Length: 336
Image (cartoon, rainbow, N blue to C red):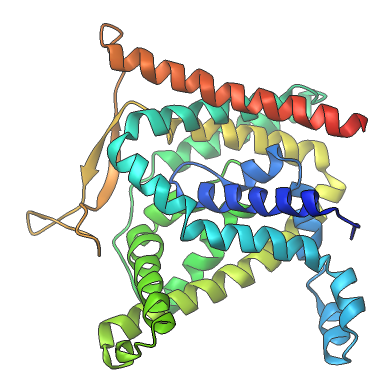
């Protein structure tokens, strides 16, 4: 599936990876959904499938060009670079907007997920089997959204498992990896505190400051980052092989379940909700930045007499319109 790509195509791929990486960090939003909607999901799964024993043999034998073509490495590199870059750029901007304009951010995501349901389902051929599969996907999605989060656990074996499970948001549309990490109790540890420590460490290294090597707290977080990254890499390859197999044999059923997953995830990104903060011995816990740690959300129905509600609805429509524009863009590119 390796392709000759123009500079513009490469740039678009990088920005697609950027979008997917930013979405993966937001609880309730799935990077896999972004990949599905931006029309590079199947190539992503196919490319990860190519990281196998044959690829390893090509690499060991020094056949680097063959390895590059076989694994579709250009595509993977651009998407992964975009995803990684987003953690230090777009996702940090998102953190700011969620902190200061939370209702409008969630409203936009809610509209985008509504739009993605329309985008995926509009050309889908519905049958009795696919209808049942969609209902099952909805039930699983809603069940996940209602689960109570566990306590934080920094055991490295558990962190490795979190990497495997958390990366599911990149490979399974509708299943938010960051929300799964909230349920596992390690969202703040892995996607807030550890990322901030890594960012600070990289800044120190670039400035020639190596004093962090004598800081046991910093070293602990860096070990956690490395373990989580290893688990994520393993999870990407492992789940992609499974998904590639089932997509090839039961494409319609899997797509129906994905539509159900995405529909079930709407409850997670419902804009009108209040944070329930995590307490320990009656004291509100705070993360590495000093922000209160969210344990769960209490959802409520909006007050339509409030002008803020109507602004939120406007942002829902804006999010939906963004997906319609993507639909128009994909139709134009398919014609050319």
